[in-house]
Length: 358
Image 1 (cartoon, rainbow, N blue to C red):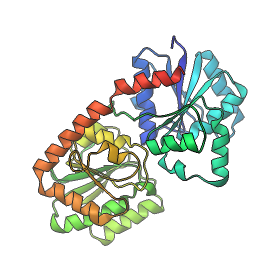
Image 2: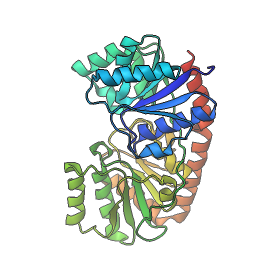
Image 3: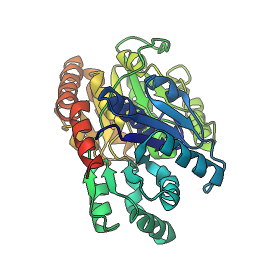
């Protein structure tokens, strides 16, 4: 690739799967000697601290969907730093498209992390289908999204590329409450699609039988109606001393090392980095059957997969782990081995460099 630059573009560096992966990619490319950069369009975010010092960083503070000042500042940055590839994550594809209009020589690779895009219809679908004609490639985090890009967007350079996990921040500041070896953790911002309420309902059933177990929510709390709904459930069911909120945490490795079980109760996913991070921490997991989750987890061997929005099945899976330390150990170790073998940084970067040079 010579020294042609690559820039990751994303709305912000608040904690989330796409944001974590954008940072991981930028760092991994830099370690390969590639001229690597990252741009946030709307806000900076706490994950900025996880960027290697060698990474070029640009914050545009974009005020609207079409912010001409931001667009021309971005073009100037591309030219100054010899950047020829824009790697646009999630909704940043529109900003990349705007750049392409005034700077056609740049290549756009769109990284689609959003499982719900397969359900797009009407005007929103028409817009993204039109814009996709300007993409030089599409990366999809699961096979369903890849088939959608090929069959619905009719894009000829669409591939599936699995995410990879990496713990960067080595700090140890977050102390989880509750008893050792009796902590269930969910690493997910408080968004409705993550369906924390389903997990709360399941945990409530488990708590009645095993009151010394605790549940820990790690992820941004937006203090919105969804957040209030979760806290109301906790209050009504008298779970205040058993369910804990920590908001944003950067020391994810340290947090997961204190956990006993990893849970993910989403209604929709692509390929969640959280699930891979659970693997790096050797956590036994229970996860809903959405997106690529059932391909990451071998049900009954490296974890337990349940149907989404089924709190009874989720509670049963949690109870299986609560009752068996051996199962927790064997499933966690198998999950770790699978993540190491199938979702490595080395494999990801080799494939990514091939996409860039198409």
